Image (cartoon, rainbow, N blue to C red; front, side, top):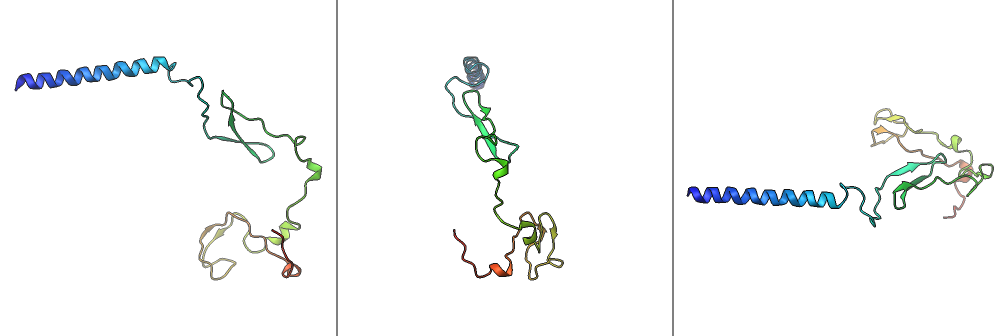
Length: 133
């Protein structure tokens, strides 16, 4: 019985030693865990640009792509607002206010929490206008 226990312990120790040696070998072959040549995978991080757009990592060194400049696309003097009189359209729940069922500006409210969107209302003269999609 004693020989079986010693044999089992020896076999486990040899197995652990082989696994450790294989790990050291793999670590040294891949240059200490650095990027393997030919590996094109980059992390899915994004960098916010000054114009509000976002760029990801690209290239063999996984550096952030350059931010688009105003000269590449639109000009700041050519900006057209997507909605006219936008600040006048927000009437009931502006962005970031705390909404509670009891104190909500919209009755029959089922939501409670911070309002993290903006509801743009229509004007009375716009109620019967067709909207193109």
